[in-house]
Image (cartoon, rainbow, N blue to C red; front, side, top):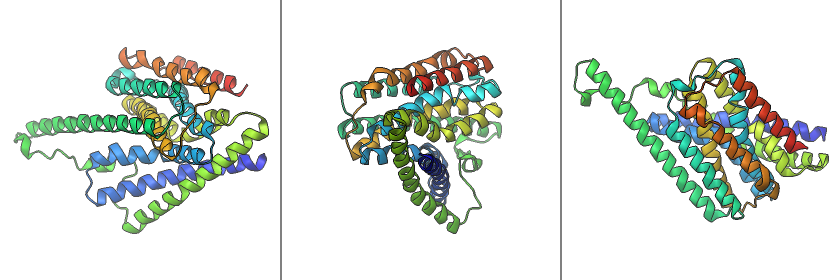
Length: 334
């Protein structure tokens, strides 16, 4: 079992490094090929940062380990709310009244209810997967329209301040590309290719190590694969979101902190499960139907007063969120 724990840790490290490498390579390649920074931010970065979770779920489905595939997604969504928001709040308060995430939050809630309804009626098949991916395309299109309108308004405002017609304004601000995660104007073609190769080779290798070792750990300690997926795998694949949210909280960027969690949860349910189900039907474990899915829904609803009433996520709430996650983990493991 010690070897499996080592392999699981190694697989997780490879996944995180390979995911970061793929994002850097894909982002810079797209920008070099002339793809607008806005499109890159809404699609490539979103997909790339969720690549570890996606590869783990696909690998688990192919290996007939649906408990890990679904546990990875459901557990990550629970950890994203309670742990990824709770731990940064212990360091510094997150001022949710300084941002407006109501629209995207309602989309996340809708995605959660949609996924829950599919899980309740039986195995998640490729037909359900198509429905989930169609819902994701609607979310991405809405985000694109909202971001484009926002940039046009900013361009018109900048043009007015400069006393020149709005149509002459440079709406696509040059600095936008540099603000995208992984973008590096000085990155050469050789490094771009290297990042892409490392990412594409590392992701399946890391997923293979993590899934296989997780199955062995579950058998060794006498728990189900679902439990391992909900805890070990879910927490591990949520580490990038945790790092991003901690930095956003320290920089007083509440919109980034909340947006990171809301966006990640939506993509987990609609994108990862949608794509994974194309590789095989995903049965929903009975214990997940009885407990974990409802905890995920409850954690999502828990954000409602922070999004709509502007309650600050202070240290007291950070303690409460973290304690709730620890309680959940203990209940799952026991």
